[in-house]
Image (tube, rainbow, N blue to C red; front, side):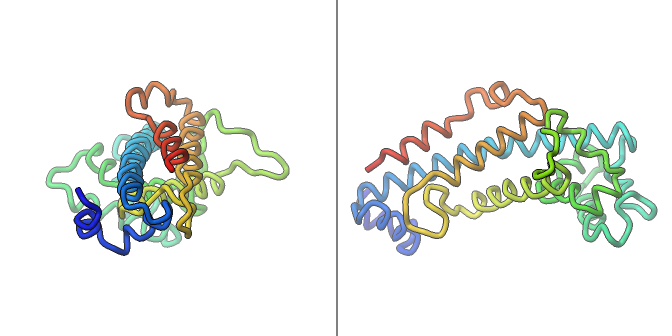
Length: 227
């Protein structure tokens, strides 16, 4: 496909960033755009596996403590997340329940997005759940005087992954230095390594779970050396 047709499909504003990154070379701009799509696909696959693993770890933890319908029960009056200081958490659960044609606990769990699971580490939700949720990270480092690996730290790290997820969902590029037109894979590599680290904290063999799915470093290297 010639660049003019490619640009009409993708849009001039979107392609202008890729053109600038490769010095106006239209062929390289199309190549870089396609490489970015491949990198986005790989990151989304890895993030999706992490999201499923995280929610299942949380579900297993709270099922053992609160019962097999803990999530639905948590939103009911008197439930662990029913207090006003838990914000929208009970309403998100109730809305997910409303969307189901037939209820099952596993279906309700699947209705919850990453942002919901992240907020279970927020101050009020973490305390309401009994302050035990960090147990899903048995290999989490011990806190030091200067660095606290507490629920606030996990909440912040999950925010980074949630932002990545939203960036991918909105087809924003991940092959540039953030806020610039400079070709760079630091953002992709940093978030990829964060996901691998949290897999490790959960004592999940990320190599096994991502077998045949993870080619992120290879694609990042293509970005780096594509001239």
